[in-house]
Image 1: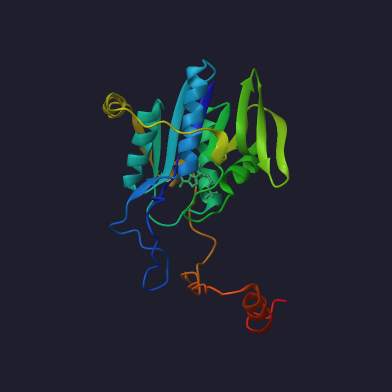
Image 2: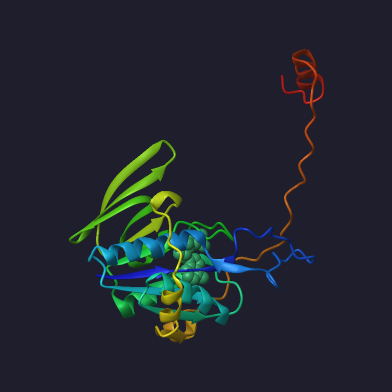
Length: 249
Ligand code: AMP
């Protein structure tokens, strides 16, 4: 079974994000970039499926700038077999990424596309769902457990009220949530081996996709600064402040 794992290059989750002075977006120049954390979880799950003898080939695909090769190499070092880079500078909305993935699915015929539940930069949480709709495939989103048997997958989903278990027919789409697994660190020998694994490079136009954005970002702003807390000396003072200052009781 072939597994396709889309991996996005995003600002590293440890970086304190700063808004650009012209408010057109967030600063990415000279900022550490990494693979989206949920995509690392998706790669790990695919590698575990391969270790169990269920997956036969794992293809890591990224749409983005030339530098997104780094994230594909990370996936290859974790155990993916080959990579596809769809080169594009500039904004790629989920619909454009979903169409790119749809075209790659048509070429590669994977049985499973394992994405992250959301990219931590734009928090869209949309690409997997859009891809499922474009392909007409079943989807199991927010997976905290995945079991593949024959031509179906059982997905335990993290929903508001608890856990929901669904079975989907393959080929299908699964999106990884935080508790699905703990991704491995790539070992040095595997990082070296990954350098020799092939990465195909193409453009959206080669796949017949026009990635022109449909949304216009009006402005990006920092969240309002939080006001410092105050210590109160007694319950009476707290009640008094809640009643007369905050006016919440
Ligand atoms: P989003 O819908 O943007 O929150 O992203 C959900 C998931 O779609 C991510 O975790 C990735 O698996 C995949 N994805 C989104 N954008 C890209 C991209 N540019 N290249 C590869 N995969 C992507």
